[in-house]
Length: 481
Picture 1: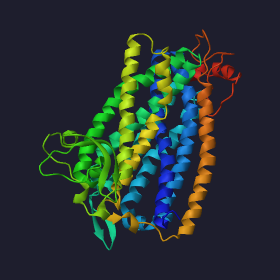
Picture 2: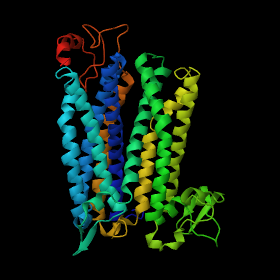
Picture 3: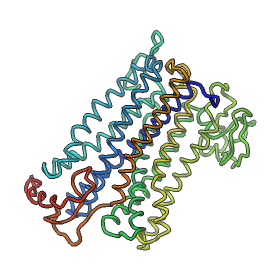
Picture 4: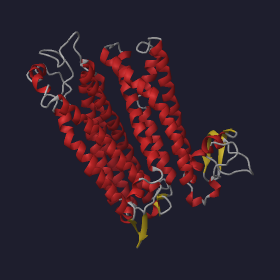
């Protein structure tokens, strides 16, 4: 069917499930840190705007966190069902790394998540803030271990192969493999940038509909400061990551660049656009800038970049896909930098919250960070092909012995269930975003007060609760402890 085999369906199924999953942890990482900053600012300034934003975004965080856990569990089971040969070959490395993630990050998050989401009126302010910070740290620790495992598959070291299985010999070398620092920084920063544009887009949506209040303005302001500062940093990290990839995975870089062959001692041009043709072994309709490929990738004007024809056809990644996925990621990155710079210019002109063209751009940039993460993930994973563990095990040798029919049925079931389940979850989350934070005009009571309408402290409550203010009044002394 369509020229696909059982292996192709297994790869599509894993790509489908991980594409859903990666979106939720990305927002979870960014929102957890954002919540810690909001609560810290509220404790320092007693400005109720930060408290209202905390309760508003904590509900969205809770929904997102739950969907991330569910999608992650499903994805993890595929290592045993669809990729059992890979698990048998490299399980001695990947298994412990994923276990460390559960023991350190997941248990830390689970231990403090309940206090963070449900303990606002039940524990002291210091303990509650500590719980929020621990959840934020837990998300970063989770990122650490997941990226350590995936980076080892990209640049494996610290092992020996005995009887066809990988045996760890140096855990420090395994964890801190050559690509790990760059990939960790790149992914964590991408999560912060994606969350910033998600928050900024939410604020722009409300401002465009005439809902202008301190909470909405604070959302947009904080998001644009993050975009202005972090988006350029991400570009620098990406440059270092590219240099590291050139050193350890030159075929991936050649595929990303759509670069097929070098001519004499000529410097490598940068192909801005084109269509890499894997059969004809050339990039059609190429629009090139001379010397720029060498300048970007080798930081010189005379060194050449490895070409795809220097590698056997069976060892070449699919340049057609990674060429364009990389350009989508980079193009969105430049657009993010532009958005941050535009916001700074408008801020100086005191029109950040009233410029409708900018607000429309900020609104449409909402999913840009998540799309860039997906594009970058496709570039990384497809660019590693045909290897599942780079240079050690081919993807074709890693899959379980399933039939085409079995894989077809499970793939269809995954698509149907995922769109139904996570579609409903995303729909509910966007409903919360559209409601926006609830504030009370002219209130000087830090905890709402009787009858004051504020964002409920309960994380999953989307309805007003008039009795909540009365309950909060009875717990104000407790919060001082």
